[in-house]
Length: 467
Image 1 (tube, rainbow, N blue to C red):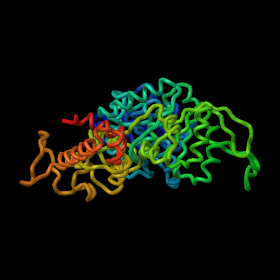
Image 2 (cartoon, rainbow, N blue to C red):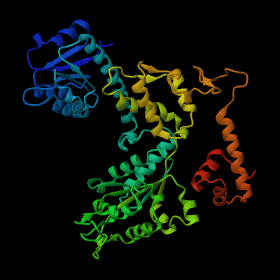
Image 3 (cartoon, rainbow, N blue to C red):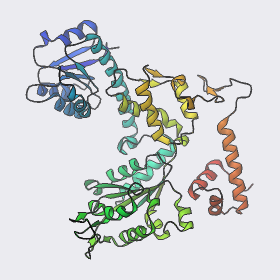
Image 4 (tube, rainbow, N blue to C red):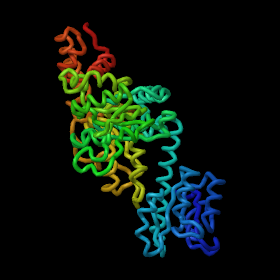
């Protein structure tokens, strides 16, 4: 496994007397490089992109090993650093992992442990290289704040984001189920918008802040504006000036505050609570909701004029069940995140396990998948996760598994195609609602308790028509 690996060891002293170098030369056919201090080590990293593993002492002459890790990974993102910890320095473990270290080795050396950590580090490096290569091939998922997606629906969303970010103005409304990544998309819009990305990205969760505090959080207040206001406070609107304000769960905002936000969007001015002085601001608002705001407008719980101010560019984030081809790529991403610091790294999920995951409905979307991968990294001790290692809800009977040729294996005479049956039933419900509403799509969406945009997408995708 380690025959074709290039390892850089950075420790004080001479290479001829270094025990790690001697061990690696005896136990492996890896290519071993050596440096006495961080300056020399960084120079080697700059000049040799083939280095895969970096073993560095925590304490080095002139600079710490952590500084070498930060700068080394900056020069070579595919580098996997491992820190050598002297006795009594366990409190530095968290610092090392935060600096980018994959794991640590204690001294005096337990060489069996050293070999195990090195092997796992090498497997992690292969995963890291594959992900970096994949991200390079798909520029958008690398550049959109870590958003992963190769499916057609995600590529279409990436194109929309590109058009939005090319134009520095215009508010955006993100719609989609909980867990689909709305904050990631909002951050990507900010990061990719020239000019605005030099200023603040300010998130506000309208559902998490009590109603009586949300106004003061957004608008700020002057000293003496109310009891307890012993000093003036700048609001998040002002913090977001020339940048981006992200209003998450906008559907939970109360009507009185909606009216004040409408004025901000119309006139680009606001007054802090207790002040008579108007403050001008230039912000782009990205709002997000998992509510059907169309229905909220119809019911009168959300202002129609505010809705249209926010919905200059609507973007619907697809649920994970509609982009199951992205599941293997998302798993790779999450394995990179959760394998760090583990002695026994999970390399991948087997095809059988992936098939089970693709058949699952994912009510919690990407967030639920992320939690599953973290759970497997904590509880599973093997190199690969197979179908029987998954939690019980992924082992339901009646799911046809595909064989190596991609055909479904019928394990019983009455195996059911769950997705075909549910899709057929859903189509009949949609057609029934459309016929009842004389094909008025807005009215039909109301009957189905479904967003009009979702209904239109299903009609087009499934080629539904009056005939």
